[in-house]
Image 1 (tube, rainbow, N blue to C red):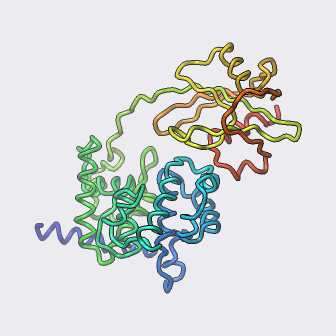
Image 2 (cartoon, one colour):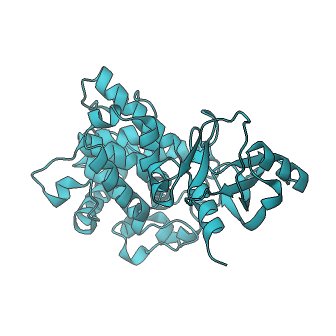
Image 3 (spheres, rainbow, N blue to C red):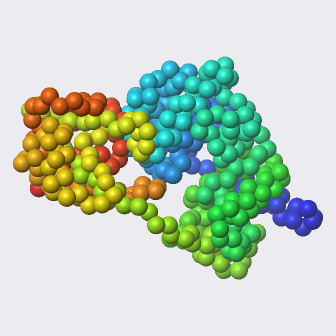
Length: 367
């Protein structure tokens, strides 16, 4: 590496570390900032990383605190029932993360004596732990000199080096991991540098459509995008992908005690094993006759159906168009899958998706 590039890399890592020490947000898993004598808890950081992916921190923190209160150690989580884990996860979305976290905890207990591995390579072998999470834990918690890359880090790296020419996902990812490795090699404290990069991208080097706060950036002196005035055009916009639309008719039925009828989804596929109000899904709009037939199959009076409203719920890969109907349950002997009656106060104790929480709110709100 030319001397000028090495000098630049050292300057970037030093400036970022100094800024991060001053600007760090006091998050509950950052125990070494709150109480410097107390090191990071590897398990607590694993939980935080699992929760924070694709989720706003404002939603993560209260969920994290309740999760750690319920499962304070990796052994506690490993011994938990998956249904209880999913229930505690409700509201965060991306429930596969909860299942993977649960599986990783079991692996840590059975294969690693209850202690998380200390290297990125070993961490990446745990169920559901990808390259980013492995790099995060290995560097931030254990001090390994290894890179990490997420969306925030990628954006910072592209802007620092002015790489507006990179548009396709594979070249962008290749550049980001390679560049992150070059920089972390020059960092005095690799964990601090990696966490600082994530923090910078989350707070200052903002993603479009927000504007980056360049005057407050500790790296603006070395940022090619800032120098060239291209920071608003980097990274290049992603090509929009067509997402399939799923049409859903959801029936909200309550008994005389006001409890909601929930049924369990299949163990595979979207929202696997989660609980929901009976929901009919198909790729095309649902005809009235089909809706009445579905109500009858679910032991509800077809003549009682009243539309409470509709909404669109966007997932990573699908657009879900929900029609919400109230319905009256009737006695029947038809064989049914797992069902349960749940009071309003018990809704938070079962694994239920954000979409279904919207369904219940829409069906029970006053006109």
